[in-house]
Amino acid sequence: MPTTTLTITGMQSDDCLRTVMNAIQDLPCIGYVDISTATGEATDPAEVSAVRDATRLPVLVGSGVSLSNLADYAEADALIVGSSVKQHGLWSNPLDGARIAALVRAFRTLPPKAAR
Image (cartoon, rainbow, N blue to C red):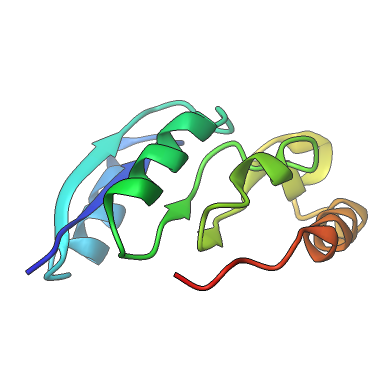
């Protein structure tokens, strides 16, 4: 069975880590999980490209996606956005409707993905 590698950032406490690990522990395709305490730190686009080239499984980017670097992750199948759409870009703040709308508008301008 093919496996998936996950990189998870933004863990603020042991409780956060426990919650994430409990949520994914029974997924049959998880082969590796990389966890960081940094939040909002951009994922290296070269890593996304390397993973994309190495697998036919969906590739998700879940750290550091923002309006300014959205196009860098066009090879990803999905984006997980957090602190960049919060007020003042802080993970603990409420969502910011203007930031969300701007990100959605930018996403809609990306070229369609080619079939794999």
